[in-house]
Image (cartoon, rainbow, N blue to C red; front, side, top):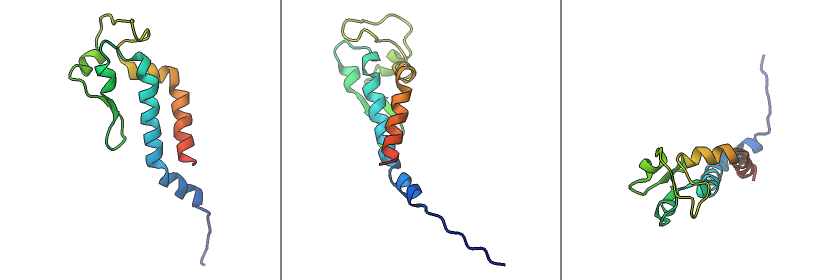
Length: 109
């Protein structure tokens, strides 16, 4: 007995095609929403924030970025009043819904 099935996979193809755009949208959303949480003195740390080449995440390339990210002391609030450690996690707590909408929007374009 032979069974033949048909399925419309056009939506799946569209989503697959838009996967890179969704990753790019997520990285851009993360960088933008994390900005007020990034410690700011001269602005160098913030200026080194970028998406990984393969869009798998974001990095801050300042030589002291890691130390600041895990720093347990106080931070200047002169420019960024929300500045502090673990700025991406703090932005995620505040903006994860927006990140999800950005990804979903990019996938469904």
